[in-house]
Length: 255
Image (cartoon, rainbow, N blue to C red):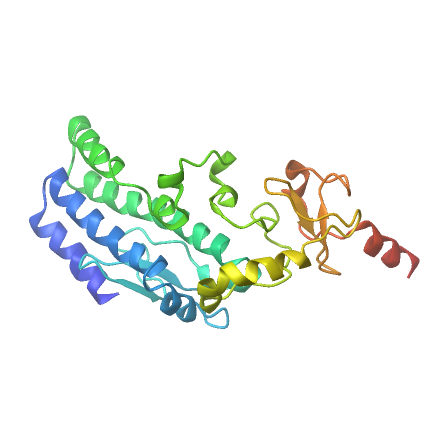
């Protein structure tokens, strides 16, 4: 965090133009992109769910840091999303990284426009700053490959950015994957995907997963189901905290 605060002080003292703030934005963004791509294994390990609320910071020297939030209230700079480590083991790794990327994009913008407000940027200066920022791909687009693929996924879901054919857990993040992803497995994903896909058979009709279909996982038995087979729509799944398949619901009621 010391580097983060030093960077803030440097911008406070020296920067007065949109170009200066953009340079700070670009450096912090570069650090976060490193954490979520080239340094992803190290980042994954540092986000231990057993630790306290952790944040991912992009620093002005193009590095990154996973640490506790600032103790000052209010903090000197806007704070990143809190507790990213708690969600790590409950989601497929790619979906978790996408979630961190989205929150990081929001944080980077908030820091840039915090400086803009502090330096009294007028309408034209704010527009200039946003235009420079907008010409760069977002962290989310870099992490998921959306920028290259021109994804058509609704609501920015990372589902379509996956080249494999496994069900997306983006809709119901409370469900547990049949086989959670691990950073070391990505290199062997080509060979293992075929094996993993065998595990994704609908617990109702027995058919395999087809790319683009909505599936949901039972939190009790951890079996996957076509949404249509258990009459659950994506919209309905958004409001389900813990999903029980028809079989598990029947068992519970009999007890």
